[in-house]
Image (tube, rainbow over all chains, first blue to last red):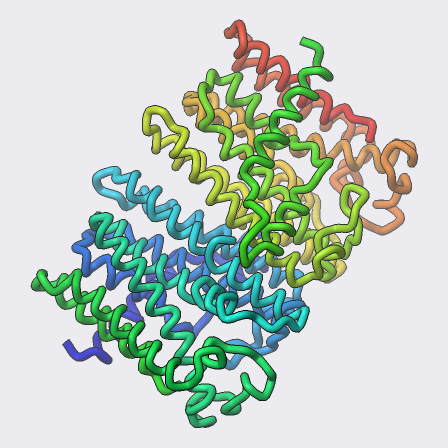
Length: 307
Length: 307
């Protein structure tokens, strides 16, 4: 398997899958459908559905039951971007090089587009009952619980809330609080990607727990790599001025750990995530092993990225 | 049964039920929990959970399986109010006589409080698997589909989107478009209340269809009563200047039908909603009949209200 080719193929498949579930742009709520479609947009990396599908394949999943969940997690990721970009949040007028949803459709419609996508994520995930061969409703409900749990107040929304509160009040977050933001704002949805894929494949509780921990390690390592690149990266590569966190007086996990300890921690977490994934696929062969090797490669590409 | 007493009792029960599912106000996402709690607030009528429980009882439901769904639909109703009140939407600083969520917590946190409530609605509804005696996962999934479907782009959010678009662009809606707003912005969540209650009670498809139509009639009649009160009501009773729709140049369903036809239509829809509910309980006795009579009384109180 050549990783970059497999990545390209799997990203294209995920993109087609996600788009196939978008609401048709017609009827009296046409503008809402259009703004939702626009928000899910072109150029997204589809990282979460790609991870979910790889975990599903690695755990021996068969059939299409994972597809509605792949679309659902991408809709949740995109709703969070639309609301993050709003004037009362980060006030970003651009996203992926094009006008953000509120810049194009106005803030009122952008609030609704985000709401519409979050709601539609659950509508879409529920369609998995239609492609479930053996009425494994228990698995679908378990996967829904992980998806909803890791997206809400005890996951992404909770992490986001502390981040927003700190920004608005100019609070300096403690080390524990910063770790909470990394764990929830970033890691939670990566955990949901891996674990929903595993649950829908019928994986054991042990393998689901292993992937929950792997997603945690990956998410925190990913954010630590952000902190590291802010210090060491080249401005051309990372697309923003180097050292901007420090100049903005923004505390990061790195600023508490110090550079050397942060780099060491990042390497440890990355290695742990990869080893956890390997522990699941190393006794397998054929397609399951290939999917596992791809997933391990994907994790490495994320935690070792230079931008 | 004395209706007002039963209404008081059932409203208190619904209020206790809804509050029992709210997230605890603690931890690093404490402010999000607090703003969600505040949004669900004191003084809500809890109309939707009361309707859901009455439909559940009328259809012979047993046990606690309906409770997480009662809380869920109230969370969805409240998230829509929080986002409706935002500056980019209706910009209302007051709700139920106290500062609206964004007035109290800022717009950024209010966006997150609404997101948090919508997401938490699904997390909560999924808790019904824990109080389901006979693993009736099929019913839970069917009720989730109705809840999600009637809240999103093909329900409440779709109706809301057309309303927002018309307001922002100063569009004059056609009769068909106004009816679409009434059907979706108002009726959809009432339909979900009745039908989720019925599904969770194990009602027949026929009874679920009957209640879907009853919810439609109720929702449109409710909105028509709004239009009628805007013309005939006393300012003291309805709490806003009489004739404000006409003065604001805002088209209503009444302005297309004319006053007499609107009143006739409102009476027909109200009578149909009541008759549909009656058709389900009239062959029952005991608790099921009592719940049906209460539900019919509740519908009458809503469509004949003077404010």
